[in-house]
Length: 443
Image (tube, rainbow, N blue to C red; front, side, top):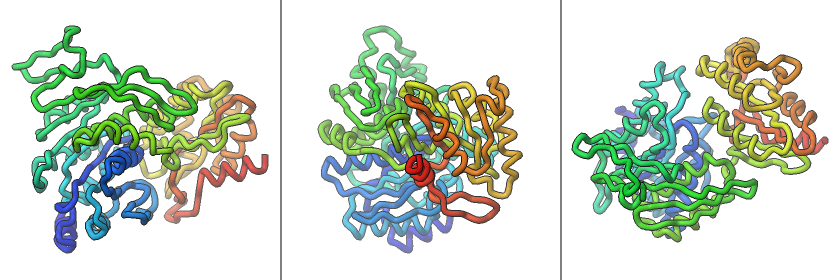
């Protein structure tokens, strides 16, 4: 905590001279950061970003290190100071649960806080799901205590669809100057938890323009069309409707786009700039990245949580004309419980499964894979028939691509943009994309 404050003071509190957007969640943070930054840039603003992939300051991209977490407080404040020096107006910051819990973002004066979703992840660090949720919630609590800048409301952007564990209801109780809720379901009605305003379910209130609850605005998506060419849908807002076209694939990206458009609404960005900003984002490395389309598809995706693997495989199933073949593993020294969960998800949604290494660190790879196998067996899968264990990740990718036939789709998940893999305590150079290109080239 002290380090963050000292670092901010050393750089003369740079985030007080910027409008700062914080985006947290289990899945979709980096993509949503890219979308929000693109929307603000399309409106004519100078924008910098700090994500788990890189810090972008003007024309410069700075690698933020191995694996996925928020940079340390001195680095965060240094990046923000460089943005101020470069004349940047907006900073879009990816806020991980570990970064928030370890106070790396304590001295960042956030103006807008947005959440993608809060599902199962990082319990090796947080111990309980409630602790994990509360770490994410720190971003929203910070709105009330951070520096108030002139003509800048503190705005919370919430996912109304993320309420399986009561996340939406929990976060919407945290005070903010304004709150914007979004939903991929055009029929969704915001439940009113205020006893003075009982829940409204009658047809007259299904129009989003009438769902203004105190300082709430509500946006939703309707008429969603999804293909290998991308997404098309209409956003319904209290200020009118907006047609959206995006080259991104995966229905889950509708939610990411709505969160980013919530940022646009919070900062009063014109509709045309929001539409242009969404269309400009061609893709994020390692996020449903298409490596080959014919005669069979190959996709690289970062999915490393149960929820992310589920939606990635659902997307693969939607596009595959033949079988879905997945390559995945689970990291060592991380959540052990999710291993069988991910095995069961893969067993239910894929036709062929190849289990392999994904940063085993100092854990036994055999033990990690055995836990994944428990889930595969629960899903009724049989080793050597519809799933195989191939310890070497390059060989696993090669195996999956070699068994692929016309119309199949191979999806390699877990590493995404990462450029190293950890065995023991050593980080070795690695690229899923490079491994895929090597095999495709040989084939």
